[in-house]
Amino acid sequence: MNQLIESAKDIFQNNKAAIIIGYTKDKSGRTKPFIAHNSDEAEKLTFNHHAVNNLAVYLTRLEKPKDGKIGIVAKGCDIRAINALIQENQIRRDDVLIIAMNCNGVVENQNEEFSKENTQIKCKYCQLRTPNNYDFLLGELEDFELPEDSQQELMNKLEAMTPEERWNFWESQFGNCIKCYACRQVCPLCYCEQCIVEKSMPQWIETSSTTRGNFSWNLIRAFHQAGRCIGCHECERVCPMDIPLTLLTRKMGMIAMKEFNYKHGMNINEPTLIGTYSTSDNEDFIK
Amino acid sequence: MEKVEEKFEPKIAAFVCNWCTYTGADLAGTSRLKQQTNARLIRVPCTGRIDPVFIIKAFENGADGVLVSGCHPGDCHYNAGNFHARRRWIFFKELLDFVGIDSSRLHFSWVSASEGKKWVDVVDGVINSVREKGPFTQYKKINREFEIPLETESKL
Figure 1 (tube, rainbow over the protein chains, first blue to last red):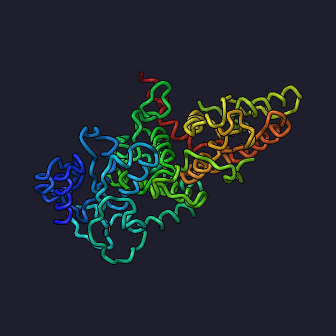
Figure 2 (figure 1 turned 45 degrees about the vertical axis):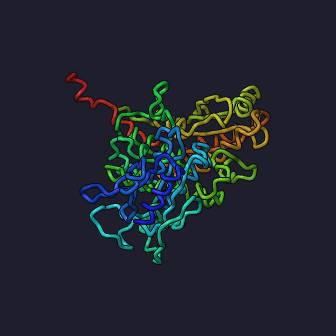
């Protein structure tokens, strides 16, 4: 990616940003997150089909550099996370320099070559392959049709089940949860200084990894993402127990779309969904 | 020995707002309206105060059903608490439905301070619908993970 390295060098030479959060290839060939501090380090930056991580998570975790902006390499789904953070007043647009990448889909398994079929689920229904908010836009968009969305099938199957069957499905899934909180740590929108699960007086969510505690944790995590999840699927990617966590957050997103025609992180000037209200919200379910 | 329950009586946790529904329920009492007594009222300042985690906690603690009730839209003592709450419930009710807690266990209503009669109808309706549905055995089952089996207890 010469284009990326050149513009990164240009950014450092003209002091447009203090650091650039991006991807690099390590010795074993794995693509991993990387922070470049100067133009020498900028040589190591890369972007390819294995750049899966959502780097927006670092924007709220990193200490803000004293001398300049944070540069960030971002693909469509990461841009949505950055937009969402701006909408929620967690970062300011002026504090970040967005180097946006046209994205042709990413592959989770670093040993697999890119093909239409083995992209992550999110790429299969991606609507933001060309980012909508950036300072630089790099990369070429290849033309490919979006393949079958296998998660939608599972979603339809679940919705067709009886509540008891759905409960059994989730009981077996949540039963596996080991409460490692990787889903929370990797989420760009889980930025609370103290998470509700760490509050102990009173303790709302049991910290022990029992099915009951797992139910409350996963339900509350999904609820806190309601109308906020930007669908980067990082939670599901990092889950060591392979729980289909994005089913829950995607469901919340579908409701936001159905009830409010709203998608989070699409427009930085739009007020957030859950922080506002309308007097005409649906109340069919309220007696 | 496990007790054999002759008749199932549901436990209902009712989260009610201080300004409307609680006063409405009080009116039902002072008017001597007859109502079923399965609901335990939990008074909160406003429906906007009800974090969905309360509802999950109620199920964890053995509730068979939950009722959430507050002021009618536009009547909120804090102007907009119930509007914010309503938007949250839209998501939360769908989320619970998606994991298999169907809507017959979670009820919402608006009951004002003058609607003692409506309160009686709502609470009776909720209790009857949960009674029909039966005990919430699924949540009780995951609760039992915490209990020490009888044979282990005797060894301790």
